[in-house]
Length: 299
Image: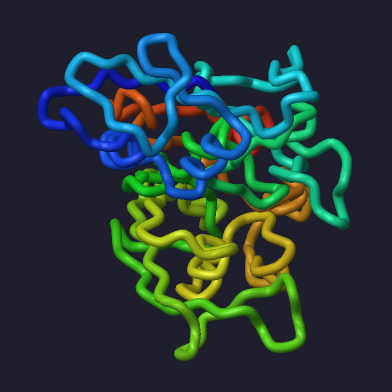
């Protein structure tokens, strides 16, 4: 991490550490890491974090978490990188891939395919949810991005005919006796999902919805759709339990066609950690989602 800052007249005579924390949103933890393991220069000369700085001074804070590990990303042409710079990247994650290594999936995760050094996912997607993952390339970028509001847009296919729009406001907690399943419960944490219907397929009784997460709970859209009575197509945990209610041709099973929950993280809006400009990144639908949509339009 190389963080540069030009001292303005309003910070004349202040300690370098206070200026960096106040003006760049640097965390106190990162300031301590720079002091102990990194470097700070002022106008090209070594400078202590507690020493004063003056109008026009050029500060450069340098810190690398693992100095013996290369900090360059892998050239992985199998990943769809929608945006990248020195501070962050946004990847269109395919379904079937975990965001970061877990004890069940310690290889082939998105972050391990990108780098040998620690990356910092700002948002995470379930393994079988496709779409945009915002990844900070260092702790400072992660801290600053997470401090500012983000807008997360998803699209999904659900069983049933919904209304035109609505908001599901229902608290979510972990189900008793499970480390994976979540449920709506009065003792859960607040969770809100806003949705709008884009299209209804009458012959298959499936609705195409746009979702906006107003909170970010584990499995939130999946749990809320199940709770609201229109479960996501293909959802193995919270989806439809039987095909008996559908008056569809025997050969047509939308859950099996897509083979995973029909949920895609289609849009992210966030503030860049350095420029502070608002950025919006969008992702097109993956092939399996488009294939199912084609089938729905054809029947």
